Length: 237
Image (cartoon, rainbow, N blue to C red; front, side, top):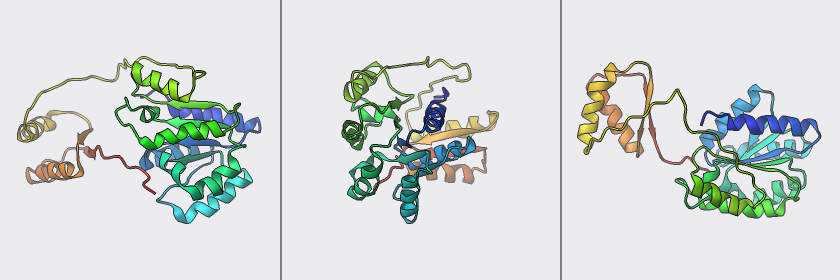
């Protein structure tokens, strides 16, 4: 986190495209993350598009743009690799032209990873079906040694692991043990008004996020924060 993983494959894409390579295929697990990445790519003049369950009305246009060579990066979810129409209408036509394959949040490949996604296993078959000279990049901010070794074992022994330090001067961690939801809510009610700036509160479910939001409203507490539940926003179709 914070090392500019996205910038690595954005810049690589620009360089490869300048040399005449085909589009980058980027596999990403979250639809919300895809939207952010598309916006980031556009800011540096990279033409990015996605085919997922939320934009089916755009599929035919995007497919035509891909065939015309006007898209630099195509973002898809791992579930899309199980869709036969996508394999027939898109992958069959661009497989030989892909300039770079990127597996984002690569820890999802490993069953030792904290967000293991079985659909990520299909990526291995896609790699095997691509020309052997196509570069593959896997990025993640949450892989320990065991996860890294598992990713390497699955993607191939030629995979070179490059890791940065997890130490960041801008981050401070503190753990406070509060055994019950009531105690945690009481702590937030007392200390949030004393904290400067804005922040994020993570909850396990949407229901918890709404419950905590309503609690704050009843107590007339409106701090500048965001409630985020940990449910995966993935492409189911």
